[in-house]
Amino acid sequence: MAPSAIDPEIKDVIQPKKDTLGLPKAARARLEKANVDLSEGYPYRPARPVYLQDAFNVRNKPWEHVDAGARADKSKKALLSAATKVTDLTAHIGTEIVGLQLKDLTDQQRDELALLIAERSVVFFRDQDLSPQQQKELGEYYGKIEVHPQVPHVPGVEGVTVMWPALAAQERAANFRNPGGASRWHTDLTHELQPAAITHLHNDTVPSVGGDTLWASGYSAYEKLSPEFRKIIDGREAVYRSAHSYLDRDDPNAGPKYIERVHPIVRVHPATGWKSLFVNRAYTKKIVGLDKAESDVILGYLFDVYERNVDIQLRWKWTPGSSALWDNRVTIHNASWDYEGNEPRHGTRVTSLGEKPFFDANAPTRRHALGIDTNDESVKRD
Image 1 (tube, rainbow, N blue to C red):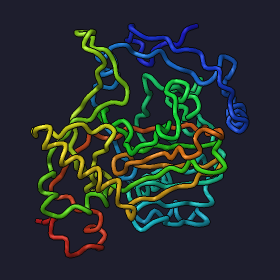
Image 2 (image 1 turned 90 degrees about the vertical axis):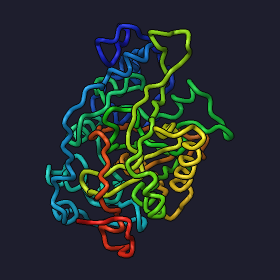
Image 3 (image 1 turned 60 degrees about the vertical axis):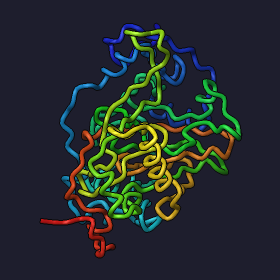
């Protein structure tokens, strides 16, 4: 039976080729333990939409998003007291929690974890015994999970996507000068009507050396800007493009086109109430209302501020069975391909979609809210 499209209303599709790559040993053991049916091959690939209009309409109706972090106890005592160790990895971004299994968290602990992710941008757990089904259940707790119309999924566990660079390399060859995978700074799914909130990547197989992932803080990137420059970008919007392209049903000869949506380039997180820079070099294409040359100059500067300030970044060394949960609303990330595909890497990912991005001129910066930068006069309160 041929794979169907993610959305049953999509009729014009491209059937995928069958994958023949052998699963890494640790990945197979994890999937078999979770009773994932591998008899029809792995991963499951949905049929791909041909036309832009079909892909655009997959999630084109708004829904209410209630952020788990916004209802959490600010002290996070249920979560933090249950851990054996909690370590902030840098001053601005990243926390590692030891002694907890994500599959065993109570709802109160899940809410508090969402708030911690919102505050620290990315939170890590090692040595996790976690099935794809349990990963999906946690993702659904945090919001509507993204079911991508193009990427491979775990068979029978829709919404849990397969992160397998060797598989991706079969479609787009990678080498040292042109790395594979997600080896560029980006934020996931910014073209969505309601873009990605919390993403959870669990890696069951990692290289012995290399393959780290880097994150940067959008809160801190915004705070790197002078108060006067912030006034230039506050309230402005930009066009955000999809990673995949499609044909235009009304003009199929025009060549490939991308899903595009408009969002604010500075947004406010609903749980923390802090302002964050919301741009990324991969998918933010143009500031609305400016000429291209003007937009390119401003966006280029914002990308550089985000990507080149190492004090607002962290680099995570994966170990087998590790999980990273990060907030796409307030981060960019970059997967290092320095292992060059010489060793296997395999994981599964779930992305929970959030609210429609919004801007509030009266919202504080992170440093202002925490009392770190009391001389910052860019925020005026009534």
